[in-house]
Length: 125
Ligand SMILES: [Zn+2]
Image 1 (cartoon, rainbow, N blue to C red):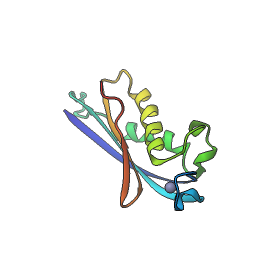
Image 2 (cartoon, helix red, strand yellow):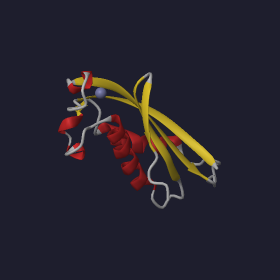
Image 3 (spheres, rainbow, N blue to C red):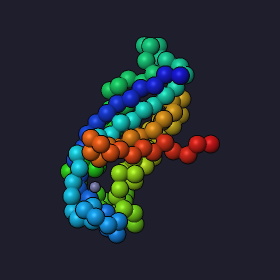
Image 4 (cartoon, rainbow, N blue to C red):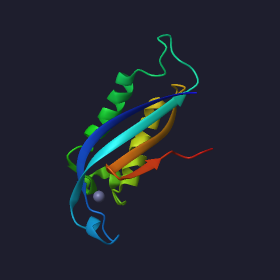
C-alpha cells in the first residue's frame, strides 16, 4: 500500500462556548492540516496521485475556512467549530473528491498549535 501526505496551513478564529477556560473567548489559530491518501496501485507515471491534484483539492476546501470566523460559517451551524469538526469537514469534502478514484482517504489531521492536534479517520467498516 502506498501513502501520500500533504500539509497546508490556514488561519481562522473561533469561539468554543460552554467548555470553560480561555477557549470561550474569541481567539484564533494558525491551523496546519495534514491529509493522507492511500492505495495499492500506481498510475502510469509511477505515482499514487499527483501532489498538485491533491493540493488543489485541499486548497479549495481551505479557501472556505481561511481568515474566517468559523462560528459564522453555515457548515458549522449547530456545532462547535472545534478542530475535530474542522477535521471532519475536510475529511467529508475530500472523500467526495476521491470517490471512484480507487484511493482511500486515510485521515485528516488538524494541528491547532505546535503541541496539539486532532485527527479524523472516518468510519471503519
Ligand atoms: Zn481554539
